[in-house]
Image 1: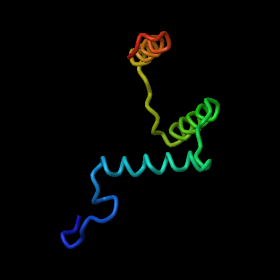
Image 2: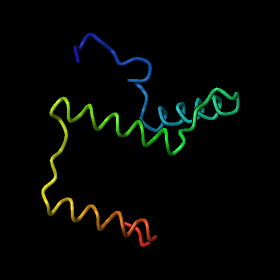
Image 3: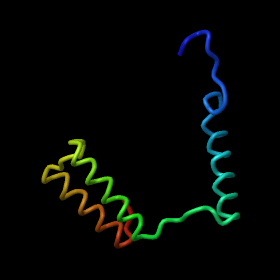
Length: 84
């Protein structure tokens, strides 16, 4: 940052202050009825769209067999309720 420039607005706030303001905005939008909560179908579609873009741009992570196996086991434990 240039020494002549000072931090203003959100840049000057601590992460806790920014989080508090964002939380208030989220609560207000939900109370007003203009907030949006994703359904599981919408979330799934958004995730798929992001994954397709990452692959198209060549930024997708290619899993090794060991990584994929570990991720699958972790997901199965989470689904069963055993946690991480």
